[in-house]
Length: 626
Image 1 (cartoon, rainbow, N blue to C red):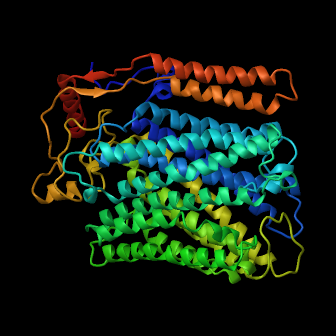
Image 2: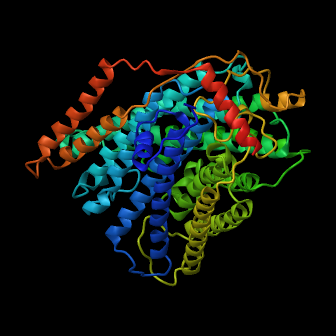
Image 3: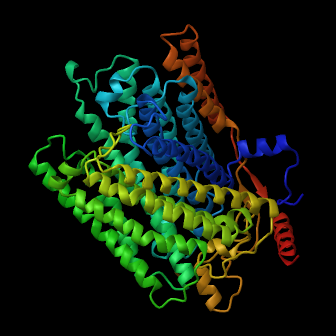
């Protein structure tokens, strides 16, 4: 049977996706899961903006507003931005380094299911009517006294999802270190692979503090711990340290892969090698290092003292330098290039001024005296949205258009893509640019309503209209994706025509074993290099065609995670309901049973024979000619 033959039937297809360990399918699952939560977080944002459209609005109550701002921030950071970036990492990085899969396919699947079920666990709080309400940072003094189970949903859901993220980070580190194709030295790796590598190293060091903090919070709330209760010898401020030791590197864990996406796009559509490649690599490493040195600039107002404030202010200024290096390198990549203005390139062009504005306001807040004035005002909201939306979300939208043909074998409509860009980009600046002035004019953040005639009315109306425009842009993108899937017009290996890295040398979408032969890499931008040497395929094999070893799928990652998901409800309700403790124990038993099953069962994988590989390549070639 040909290895490109598809399983038939809905049930078989669902089982195939639930048990898959193929990095490309897991990448698509991450994208779909992240997109679901992105839309959910976007709806929450629209509710927030609609409430603030006019003074003394009563669209939602004050309590519901706290629920919305908490869930919007938590959803967008933990359940939308990171998973969508993981989707691109999964789908593209193994292809860029010439690997057949990631190092640990089973753990890759486990990481996805932990993210997905952790995110669902958190959002089920809406159905229980007990929603986290202490802000996305859940500062300890607020989260300890929050009534009901809202914060328990937050702590348990993020522990499950965060463990999945940590697994993914370790997996990518091992994959990139160990599984690069022959000839792919570190200084020949594409920038997206480099940024994935550094972001994964940051995950390794940043997520354990978050896990410890959430563990402490869970014990304080559910088991009578006193880690953050100052009346019992605990320390409330330590939660802020723990959270931001994770939280500030998290910003760079998000933005570095975004930088990698834009580096690929600038190079491809300027038809030039990335300017100053070594300096871009070292700037990425330096950002990863300095990202851990600046966390207390979130805490200038808690009274750490002038010495600590000065040290963190200097570190905050310093991290702007490697970021500035990147900006100039992107500009010089375009300088003298033969630029093709595609939808991904439009997002890349819009990203530079947007992100620079976010960076400049960040340097402003690096000055402790100014931060005292701006802290907890709408200026802060404007700043971090310029960084996250103007950097990460624009990169996600750019990467979606850029790699869609590689992942799905079809092209998104370019006209609809450009319309999406116009609505989203203009709406983004309408929403958040005016919020800088709202901050200067004294509007505090996290307020559910405001009195009229304070000079804030028109600015809030403009901001809300901008948010609606962003929403329209996302709706057009969803329509575009659905139409591309329905039309199903297949594309070739390199639909953009100027692909430079290894993923553009193989079919779209790739066969499940990726490469019929391991590629040989002779330099940076290896596909471009081969084409310039007259090798139209862009692919130079390092070995003859031979049998390929691949892993079997498994349902165990889903079962392991489902056990933790069930146990979470038991832990929360064990004191209120008789079924709580049995559910807690039962869920943990399911998880440990699945872990034991994984331990005792040898999964040796299977071989795709040389004949099957040749037959599959022949079918793909015929499909390309038709």
